[in-house]
Length: 70
Image (cartoon, rainbow, N blue to C red; front, side, top):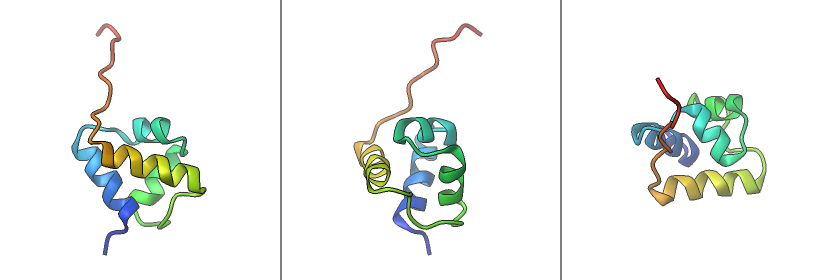
C-alpha cells in the first residue's frame, strides 16, 4: 500500500518532475526523495519539508523547463 508521500512522488514524476527537481523544490535530499519513492521511509523528515512536498504535489505544478542550450 502506497503512503501519501510515495503517491506524491510517483504522481510528480508522471507530471515530468525528476527526483532531483522534487528534492530541490522541497528541500529534501535526493536520497530522501528516493527513499520515499521506494518505501524505505514513509514520511519526509521534518514537518516543513513534508508540508513542501504536499504543497508541490497538490499544486499541480509542472517542472520548470531547462533554458540551457543543447
